[in-house]
Image (cartoon, rainbow, N blue to C red; front, side):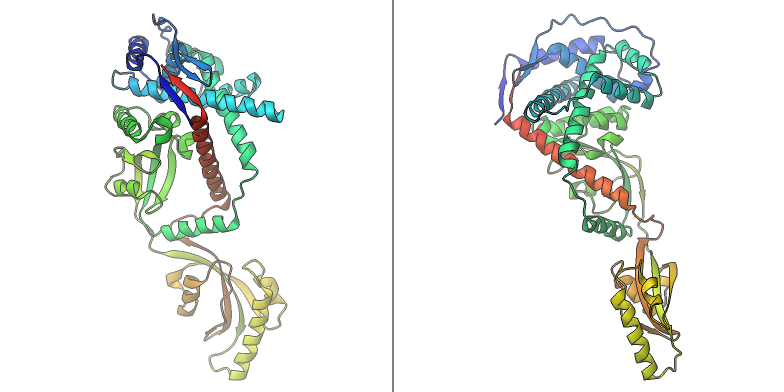
Length: 443
């Protein structure tokens, strides 16, 4: 059970620290913009260093807290105003507590299992170089830009060390155990096809995890402050990377295209009232608070494309009952030998008088009525019963199905997305358990 003890006047200390930061901090900009800044580093705050929090006997100093706040200002683009600083302080403190809990847990596992988990200095330098490259600058210029904003390079290294090491541990411990089955992938593909006829939304999202920030009231308050900062011009991707608990945070909150019904009902209700270019107000959901930016919207597709193959025996319209029965027997031999779209032609080649071929991709509405019924009702990969037309007797199989104007869902992309969602859920639960069992004092 978490043992949290508030020591001293937290609000007064917090506002003293916030005031010192507000006096010395330059306007918040993203790191890419900061790289071009030539201003000298702000003068050190006159605030003496003291204890801001204790996490299982690890001390977080007011200097650490102030540094993390500066890093949040620079990297999120949130303006350091009297209104925004309390939330920046809260987020900085929560992230530092999480960082200490993660490193403590990783050190425990290293001791118990005699393995190396925590990122080395060499690995951190590679991460820094990659981060600088993403911001179109060199590592030296990147760190100089941070220093010009009063952010120590060690503050960024500390954050990166915890993030890289924790992600490695979660992926290493649980990634090899997770199995995304064919049934999950097929179900996702079928949902995509089924949802293609519904309205679709291209969104960016921020999820504020209520259990992480101290409850729904704190999450709603934080969400309202973020909305205010975003309306003032803070870049959504930068805010999402720093504040969001959703799996999309690493992509700047980009959740891509989603269909009506995929999101929580509360979020869907908000989207239904929004126009492209609009930002939602904070939306309370089961796990916390959502912010959604609607980038684009499109109507659902009305048509369905199917890719089909057939095996057939040629029969005229006046064929006798005996000829029809003989053709049926041949096609039943094919049905018993073929198990999917892939082996239909090979199975048909072994039965004299049966010809197989690819029918290509076509709109369901454009198919002959006998084939249309099969295309609409058959699961992908399942062979139909023999179908009679004026040209002969046919077996058909649906090899693929998608909505018109919608690209067929890529299996690898679906698998990666499901894998990432499950790992993110595991990590959040792991962190929740660590917080619940920790002794955390904030002062």
